[in-house]
Length: 119
Image (cartoon, one colour):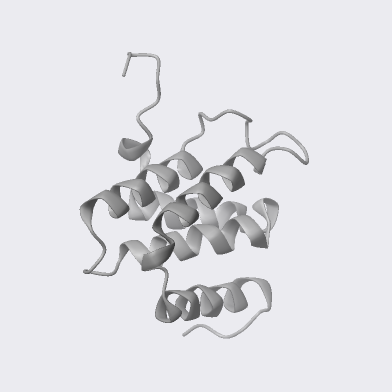
């Protein structure tokens, strides 16, 4: 990796992930947020192998990073690249996105987008 290429795995932190979602959930839209949450909760599972966790962390780092293909502030297109990266990561690690992960993501989505009470 050359010095001008962003290090997306290094951009990832749990605090950065939650801050980005809290600040931009409505702007990014439910589709982007749901995919990010699926990946986040899958990465929390101890049985997820290192290669899958690395894929997840890199994709979430891309999502968090302010440096990406299409700036997130660009109207209508800003999160389309993030959506593509998250979708590719989900396809890659789909075997580790089980019903428990889906339920955790669904609960958080309901909390944020449907005004459900805090867990």
